[in-house]
Length: 112
Length: 114
Image (tube, rainbow over all chains, first blue to last red; front, top):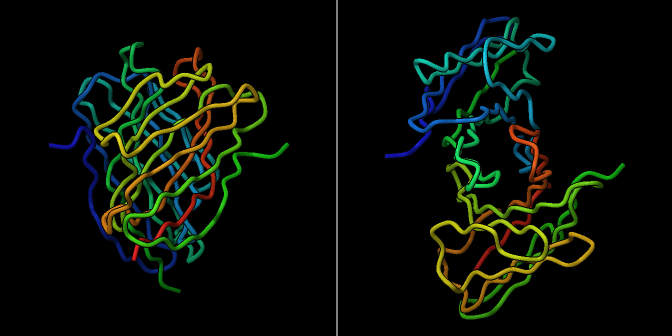
């Protein structure tokens, strides 16, 4: 079983729709990251969360530490949001350095 | 300020050959981690280097080895290449002693083994 599970695996939305991507994890963490990967391969860090909620433009990320669950929301989705969104966690054990466990990603396509 | 840079961006190797991939971390970062990402999968942790030593290793065979130089740049070496080694290899840099710090990724090196 993977330490990080994401859903859905694939998501197609019409431009303007509200999008939610979910992430559940099974290990104790010091932080959870939402990452964006475009077809070229490069990964960009969108959010780093250890509690509560963060907002950046049309993107909102929330985390519930007790339930070991996080969500990434995109409001008023746009075709340029099309990418793979990856959830990653930093385990809380200091001995692990800053190794990350990654989800398999959610492939989002926003249709004009 | 340059972020994480990786080279080469694409390469094709023959089964059984050896390959070396290179990574320069973001300025000020002392820790380099390498990941393998197969098509349709999330990145899998290979190993992490700090102070020129392998600090932690994922579930990869000894054919995968690495090195970190005093300037914090790093290399990933893969010997006796298999077709299954075809993947995107990502390098990430960060500061080790700051828990929860943001991680920076390079654009990756696409390796195709034929």
